[in-house]
Image 1 (cartoon, rainbow, N blue to C red):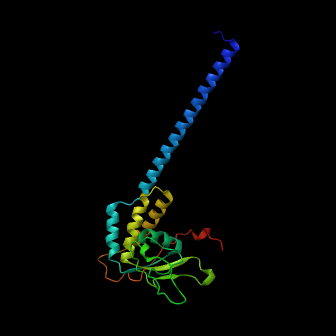
Image 2: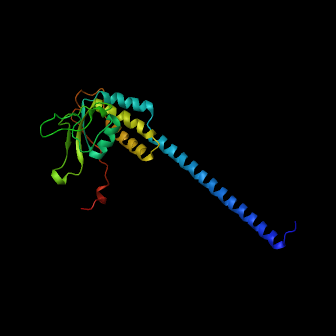
Image 3: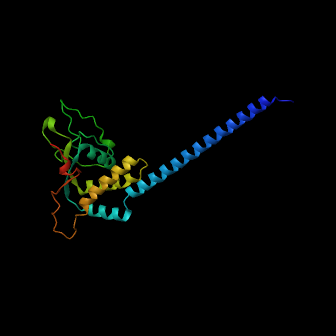
Length: 211
């Protein structure tokens, strides 16, 4: 079959264009694959850096278990993030874990069965700081050694998650609690940590604050 020169040129050009497009698509796919592999490697590196060693964690939990109580000051959102992981549920506005009694004017609706571990935080153990409308969300929580070990254990598992944001938050908050635990001296006179206030409230240098 005879093909005119112009047709043969057109067919060859079309074939070349298709090969060129295929080559470009292949290069794009390979580039995207490299990006995915780099992202995965960076994610795994971040998760590994966020995680604390098991031996060190075990020592921290053992030290925390003997604490009578610690007054923790932090933002209610920070506490809710930690409490949900440690106890199964929490809301920033809550001030106790014990279900209040039902009265004619008050019928609590929260489900106590959602607590995976009982926080045992009755009325008076959580106090919102700041008066009325000027309150900025800060609160103080009186934690027992039991509460502290539960928080440490749940936050220790968090850095292993694929969600980098949650991993980083768990790692940072875990390390903040460990900072307090590292101050505990088993040989010190009993009662020295009772009533100690520890604050999770990172800030900036005063030189950067404008009033």
